[in-house]
Length: 415
Ligand SMILES: NC(=O)c1ccc[n+]([C@@H]2O[C@H](COP(=O)([O-])OP(=O)(O)OC[C@H]3O[C@@H](n4cnc5c(N)ncnc54)[C@H](O)[C@@H]3O)[C@@H](O)[C@H]2O)c1
Image (cartoon, rainbow, N blue to C red; front, side):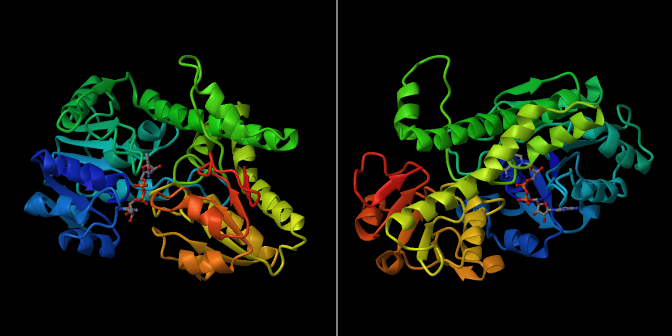
């Protein structure tokens, strides 16, 4: 099959590689010329896709910035960003732009699948009318479906092949076409009755995580008041083999999905005079967590009779999750900004994030920085860092990720 993938980011590139590895001819479409040039030169820019995975694909994966190159494809999968506007409402601009560009090159018989996370109704109410400007009719000579991406960057135990894939088409024929497409790369394709059911299933998965993370973040704040170790409590509860699912507290929620996607559902709900309180409350608690971490920094320094102003504070980790260089919505950035506003002398070490131009910072050498700092705060639990060594070297360590569990030291505090 000839398959087009629009948007070669964290979602689109691994999917393009999966189809090419399965023997299909893939055209990857991205407006970013640097990404197109990198891929055509055999270089990946996504941690989960090593350069060595691109080399054997040869001509089966070509990148382009020209939508006309998609007209030869039997199926086109859209994986463009769906962020929020500054007023925290859905920003469908990337999606609408790519739909308009696609409508200009569509041919009869093509399948278009949307994978970008969005509110229920987007495929039917936003995408389809734009695609039909091509003169084609959905269900007759154009096939449209929604299939949410379930990728979890950095995860290796579940892959595109072994993670069940949901599809919901605009008509039964659309669903059948989408199912055939994903059966090329997924062991199990799960059909739902409509695009709306598939769109909402994805949001349920993300809201479920957001609400539970907020719950344990709030529990961490309560444990701080009660003087109880939240990690010990969670470790203990997690020994129950049924009826409990583990979530860990942390410095706040980051990434392109969890801090954003629930607000897509809240927006849709408000259009129907419905106020989904769990979503709003979870967002509020999770957004407040970086400020709570800064308060903990203030308290630790206070015990040493040091003001935040002028103190050297080293953050370990700038990305939002371990093993990734993705800094989108990262709570580390919020913590760095809050501490800088208090005139702390902030620095960070992150092997995956060489620099943070928006903050005018570059990752510092860990050994040197630990020796010179007043406080080291573990914000991202990157692998390959000797956390016992951090505690042994830094005068004070504050661990927001629980990676120092098992270490007892007077100069160590945990969330
Ligand atoms: N990152 C994740 O872990 C993850 C997981 C599940 C779902 N999603 C969802 O998948 C979608 C894509 O996320 P991502 O993380 O891959 O984003 P990304 O920013 O990494 O990649 C998106 C790509 O789309 C390109 N692009 C933007 N507008 C375009 C246009 N009009 N035409 C062609 N290309 C265009 C950008 O240049 C970029 O390379 C979002 O809706 C996101 O919510 C992401």
